[in-house]
Each structure stands twice: as structure tokens, then as C-alpha cells.
Length: 432
Image 1: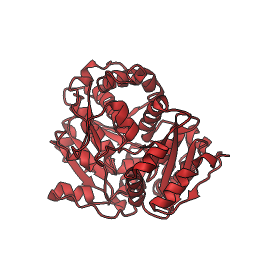
Image 2: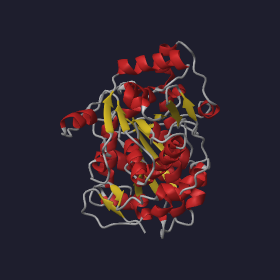
Image 3: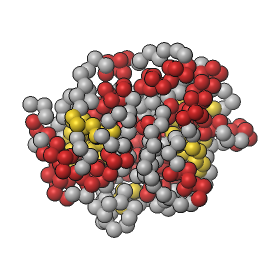
């Protein structure tokens, strides 16, 4: 059985079920597997069955756990989403991760997490998932929690700092989902969630856990689909494919490194950030200096203090071949326009960061292997940014069009712990 430990090293090791339940370690650290089964990729099925591949790939982490028998059903539920690869010429392809119900890659992790918690939870005393979101996490968590009995979700988002469609999508879900809008930035929302987890009485009263990439159950399914995509790409040639990943809170980037640690054929990993410079400054200077986030076109990546940096620097990963590229708003617009004109392909602003980051690499580096650019959100979610650049209307896919028919409701909440605690204490009456 793989045990899970804290990045701070001051908490006792726990099982995967316990790690999922608590979200964050008792010493305030992030939870990591004690080991990465290096043969996980080899034991997984090699066909096009993503749910089956994921169940086999993740099986070593769940061996001997209370959820072991449920893992195939959990994966069938979470990974029932296509991930098409769209060729863009010269060995570069878009890995489309936005075909789930909320149009974002977060659907995989949110559905996996909620399926686990629902099976572990008690309808008489459900888990309460706190999800601080800069855009896509909250929508995916709300959708995945809707209608469940063993778990409920409370979404916190920075009011006025997400796209209009995202704001609607964050607040349109039925019970047991509650949405709170804060007059603050994402980092403040994230700090508030961490403060809630530091309040032992609050945690116990509401059985709090996290839907952010703080929770290991968000990262493991991401590692699974990255490994699946890597093996499909590697089957076409000898060189391990490279990945260019848009990343804000560093969850997606860490997931790619996890997949590689489990034996997936992955070459270089590019971590593409927006104008928030914390990670790129660290890569250049070796000094990690969190700062306040700044607003950009790629708003879901507007993070000045990425939580998963603790995992990145934990020593668990081979960081060779890792590249960090910082992409500002002007470069995002230029990349969207250029690739629309050249390939008739439309990136969302976040995916454009990854496409631009790869385009900056030397030609010989790009040509020596296949490359997958993670397309993390459907461009319709950011039509207000993308349409003026391409000059063309973006039609919504059916899943996103259906969201617009739902009524939106979000409650204002002060960005402090007493205000959040008050909302949590009144959850029972929210849908009366």
C-alpha cells in the first residue's frame, strides 16, 4: 500500500482515502505519495480506453485502501470524456481537455474527487468541499457535486475577476452547492480556504476538505490522462513527447511531473504562466518570492503564490528538461490571432500561453519530438477576449449552452474567516 505524507514532514503518513478526506496535511503541508510506482504506466492498458487505462494506472495508489474496489467505477464516472488530439503541423498538436460538462480540464479532477468523497461520505454528515477558484475549478466542482448526498461544495471566487460566462457558471448549480463571491483577488480566496483548514473546530464541524489542486485526488487523475496522452503520442515514434502546460497554481504542471515519475514516456515539460512572474522569477533566480497576483486575460492563472510550489520543490521529481515561460497579454492575443490565421484553430487565453511558450523554443528542440499543447478550456468561455482577436463568433458547445438556461445565484461574503464560518454554519437553510 502506498502511503501519503506531508511536504512539511511533520504529519503522520496516511492512506489515500484519508488524504482525500482531509485535503491538506495536519501540519499545513501538501500531501504527496511516499513513492511513485515507476511501472504504473506499463501495467495500464494500452488501447484507447481512457477510463480503463486510468483505473490501471491509479491502482497502485489505491491498493489495500477502502476505495480500491470502487476505483474502476470511479474512473468510469470521471473519465467518460474524450480527449481528442488535433494536429497543428510540424509535430505539434493540441491536446483538447475541454470536452467535459463545464468545458475545462478541471472536469476530470473534480468528477474524480467528488466520486471518491461521495463514496466515503455520510449523507447525515456530508463532507464540505471548499473550492477557491480563479475560474474553472469552481464550475467543475459545482457541477460534479450537484445532486450528491455524501458531499457538498462551497465555491469562493473573486468578484469581477472572472469572465462573465465563468461568473454565471460558478453560481448556477443546484443543491448541495453554494457559491460565495468575494471582493478580493484569487490569492485572498485561497488564503481564506487555508485559514479555514487551520481552524480545527470548523474543519470538524463541517468535515471540510478541498477541491483545489491542494487535494491529491485532483492531481492523480490529471496525471492519469497525461500519461494516457503521452503513451498514445509516443506510439508514433521513438522520442518521448514533450508537453506545454498552462499553469497558475501549478497543479497541472505537477501532474505532468507525476505522470513522468510513474513511468509515462514524457520528455521536456514546459510550464507556461501568464504575466504573474512568481514562477518565472524562481526559474531564473532560484528564489521563490510570492507576491500579489495581477489580473490578465488568462484569469484562471492569475496566481501570485502558487500552492503547489511545495510539491514542485519537494525533491520528489526529476526537474530536468523543465522550462518556465512567462507570457504577457500582448503575446496571448498575438498567438490566438496567428494560430487562427495559420491553422484555423482557436485557443482560449490560457491554452494560448502554452502554445506561445512552445513557439518560443528553438526549432531544433521542437522538431526532435512530438509536442502536445494542453488546451485546457473551450474558447467560448472567454469569447469576450477571443472574438475581438479572431473577428469570428464562437458558438457554444451544447454543454455550455445549457448552462445559460440555468439561474445564477451567488452570495456576497467578506474575505475573512468569521464571515466564511457564518456562511458554513447556515448551509442547511440555503436551499430551504
